[in-house]
Image (cartoon, rainbow over all chains, first blue to last red; front, side):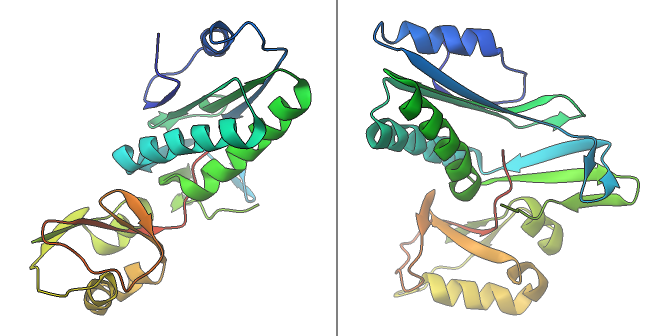
Length: 141
Length: 79
């Protein structure tokens, strides 16, 4: 089975990730997922592609800590985080987050919390390629 | 020797993704930051996070050990 937390260049399968999450517990009654994907338009500009840079070892370490924190904070049964580091175009998947809990509220809240925290804590940077040139993305809420 | 790493937008402003700085006794993260900022002021305009050996550091007074890996990072934009 694939690690619950990973960075990879290849696309991920949401079905496989959810199956892996479900396999961790028969008490899971609610699963919330978030998929971040590439857009073809951002900040008033067309976007041809998006590339990523990451401090790989630290990114994985921070994502593992984030998963542990979420499990403890929301009483989750399990959680998974996968982030792609590659070049993507519109519609391609970028990040997958899943939270599994006994009930829906914890799963939904944990999923939202994990993606918000990932953006704050995990050393990954996104660069957009536009007709006007390339630009590193400035984070926004 | 201190190994210094850069990523993403900081690499673009420095022109390289790593460099080495000679270690000195009692060297702190603040001293290393200030030394590099003199040489790469544009890059350090956007540096807002620091890591030592892959761990976030918020206290710039942290003493550095020889052979540390130090990273100066811009705001993250993953996800």
